[in-house]
Image (tube, rainbow, N blue to C red):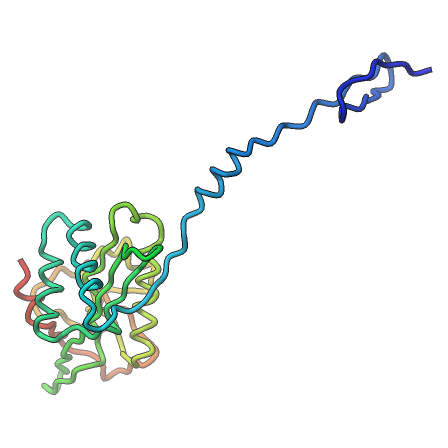
Length: 221
């Protein structure tokens, strides 16, 4: 007859075929603090939205993001200069927001495309940048969400291509290519490897030539 001493509740004996039965290990206690920490570790959702027209809070938040993200005020001053010239369409000034705080910004502006025949047209090619994310929110996919929203905005607007100056290591993953290889030339002697373009469904073979940026870009220091 199998005999064993009674153990704690939930610790049933386990028979191994010979000798005395051994007790199953007690279940791990639930550490409620661990569960709470796991819940708190889940980041709050990021909301992507356009800048509100004539909203001073949004404008101040955009400037604050660029000042925090870059080592100089050049990008923040560029945005202000474009705004002063009326070059910013609020629909194309895209904000990333977390629980009411603006944590990222991406700007799209119109360019003038000078085609090989000398004709000029505004609209087919859109300039992306500057783009910035608060340091505390970098490497948390906020920049990627801004990029995807910006490309979607350009496609909805019927643009043919998006151009930017930036690191190919980062931007090639979003479908960017070397712009010169696509027939899009910069307005100056910009390095080949950082002059990038992303073609959109509306692109045609006629959408090539020199891309002229708004003046504040060329005045940027």
